[in-house]
Amino acid sequence: EALRRLAVELGIADYVPFTRRLPAGALLALMNIADVCVNCDEVNAMNDKSTMNKIMEYMALAKPIVQFELTEGRFSAREASLYARPNDARDFADKIVTLLDDPARRARMGRFGRDRVERQLSWVYEAPKLLAAYEALFITAPARAGSRAATEPGFPRGYGPQRPPSSPESPSSLPKSLSSASMSSWSSSSFEV
Image 1: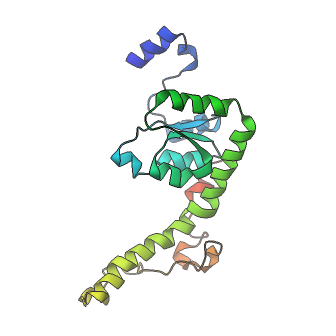
Image 2: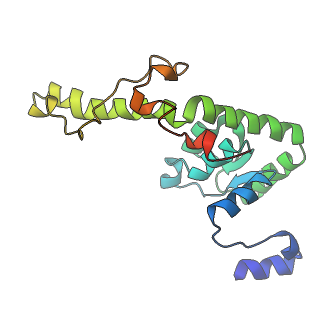
Image 3: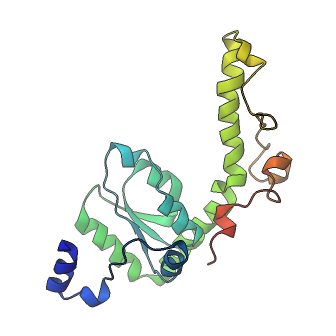
């Protein structure tokens, strides 16, 4: 309520809708009409080490982003985002205005983000890395320790570790359980741009 009152006091209430929680379809429709998307999570120890889902969603929708300088946010978004000084609201606002004033830059940043999601961060590329980490934990590490777990890794039947593809450009070398035909990638199938 305090924010609603502030919007009225500032004379911007007609331009600042307070939607509360939205169903997925309504949220997607709203995100699709945005010129700039923001991640205003403050810089702190937790946020610095976390990639927020909204960053991936914005990139999948080819939206330029403004966020504070966060390690994981920068790793994920790279050139798809402008980065404000840590917890500096004025710099954050300036970055938003910078993008609103530059449609060509917004388009370039959006294309970069969408391409990064499709070619580097979608599940078809990330799953082999996760499986390799599991293999290192449950197969390789116990084998080095001489554990019985090396021969009985504890994976459910049919879900043993798989080798990652030889390169990110060759998703066809994935095991059938991870092929694009058997798994939908949220980055390219859940959102329409």
